[in-house]
Image (cartoon, rainbow, N blue to C red; front, side, top):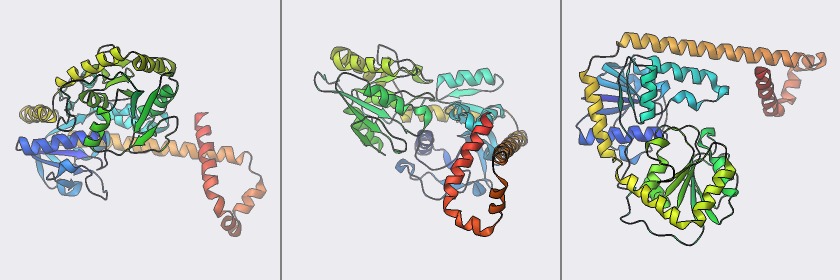
Length: 416
């Protein structure tokens, strides 16, 4: 069976890592002819060691081949999906991706949402996503394939060690610059605790990192991350948007509990008061009190950690998860297609054209608003000076400051 996963880039991320795990195991354990198709020009090689032997194919080369199933893996890859010749088309949805974009990125938000109307069969990794897609598209099939855990690296301890002394060991995981990961809120909550604690931040990107913490580590391999979790009491993760929500489950495998928000995906395995603690949104004070409770009541901490390990034992490995992916792809190939290539290509092209047109109109409105705001106060002398070449040359060092000023004016004009 010949399968292609269309990927947007080769950068290290949870979403690409999930596709990489499935691709390798489908190829090695299930005799699938699997390739990864890069939908754009990008320098560099794969950053995943486990993908040795899985071919990375440029889009132009893939368009000359024929496949049994091709699978989009990110909303932007749906544009390239229907340019490939295939018997069936699928969409691996790892989260509802329109939620990733704030209002400043409205075109992308709209574009991501529109892709769920394409004639494809859905595959997803979380029950809440499957239920949502069923409500949005009751006319199409959706297969649930839970993410596995690398149990070679995230090994489950035979016994949960008892920790009675020392500061509460907290890990905060995520990129601080990504608004929905909640890293600043997590650090603020840890800073408001009264009991002694030790905070480690795990992040490959430290842009925007601030607040109180004891150390920052990353990027880490799975083996290194597993070692960090084994030395951790609690993973503090206050995300606002998640798909399957994997980091707490990885921590469970190494004997740590978690304090999390009720983000989508947590209900797959986190049970409040049993194997972790679920706190309210934007409640740094309440979150700090929960951390203090775990620091002072070590019997309760041990209870949560023990049940977290029990939860981890029942979760599938990547090999087991790949078996479900193989069955889903074989079923998709055997069942009637949800639509034709021509239908999908026309819809995807219409979506893309509409999105680009809207983005151009939005840009024109910003420029018009900026021009109106500027001309209302700029004196005629300034405009006469700008028309002089010698003035523009002398003013060149001030261009970065001018650009920042212009962006701010555009933003304010757009908000009005």
